[in-house]
Amino acid sequence: MYKLLFRLVFRRMDPEQAHHLAFRWIRLAARIPVLRTFLAAALAPRHPELRTEAFGLRMHGPFGLAAGFDKNAVGIDGLAMLGFDHVEIGTVTGEPQPGNPPKRLFRLVADRALINRMGFNNDGSLAVAARLASRRPVFRTVVGVNIGKTKAVPEAEAVADYVKSAERLAPYADYLVVNVSSPNTPGLRDLQAVEHLRPLLTAVREAADRAVPGRRVPLLVKIAPDLADEDIDAVADLAVDLGLDGIIATNTTIAREGLGLRSQPALVKETGGLSGAPLKERSLQVLRRLYARVGDRITLVGVGGIETAEDAWQRILAGATLVQGYSAFVYRGPFWARTLHKGLAARLRTSPYATLADAVGADTRKAA
Ligand SMILES: Cc1cc2nc3c(=O)[nH]c(=O)nc-3n(C[C@H](O)[C@H](O)[C@H](O)COP(=O)(O)O)c2cc1C
Image (cartoon, rainbow, N blue to C red; front, side, top):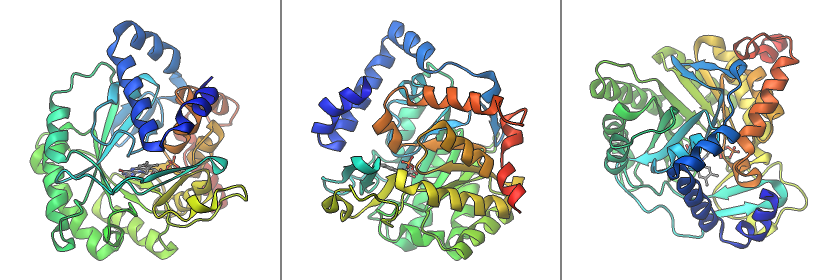
């Protein structure tokens, strides 16, 4: 049914407009109590064996919605209703900004991929913090808050911009993510270099502790798939050294590998980050490398090209405690989380592992 809806409605629309329409429908459904209860029961059935704990937070399962879908924290309940076990909002920047001019989102349908150069269009940390403060959650779901740099802020003042967001948003965040990996803000990915990343993460940690004195908000960093192997190792070592809670691997790629022969050449040339199926292999490699380096000392979150339960399972075996996705939501629709959960629970049952936690990193350990 969704395939038909996609073909007849969404595919004929500009991808960003289609996103707004679909998200509006999700939010609308979540506002109608009878419908929301029905949909949550149908789409977010709980599989007790998938219960997951990550950085001290208990979740119904390991699968969440990656950052970028709900940049402004306007539809968390609707997304939880569809079965995402955690929702990462953002990226939120210190100041509000419009992002890049449209068109800025492209569908590579034959590749089950997207290219985006949204450029952190968002309402800014003050407005998003106010929205989260006044939120009356219907569903109990873990909310991650992903923060990034305001484009107009010079690179020399980047730390202060992140600190501003952290101070405002940490009180409402179950976990906080420092995003230094979007390809669409000039210079942002340079912050992944350890000499920049150390002071940035240290300052954000202190800001979160100042803002929330009674609770240590888990802090994660999100990295790009385009880092060289030695840079991945350097970030992993830094994360251990700083006592970071997690690493999210990965954001979108500037590479154009993994595209099929049927991809539209004009779209492939668009500037921006590529996500979806072509990213699968590289994200998995980065995750394996991270797990081989940090083991169980740091929680890893696998994201990039996850479409099926098997993909999610492979990430868990590679070392991910949590998994996330975005692009496949566009192509697979509202039943995606449900199908993935069902498949994951079945996969676990037929595996040699008693719990998901036992499976985390099993393949990477074996290969070592
Ligand atoms: C349209 C779009 C917007 C995104 N915006 C953000 C963002 O604001 N912050 C961020 O950390 N990641 C952002 N991402 C990256 C996703 O969170 C995810 O890391 C990436 O798409 C890989 O996962 P996927 O292959 O399942 O889509 C965005 C992705 C897409 C497709």
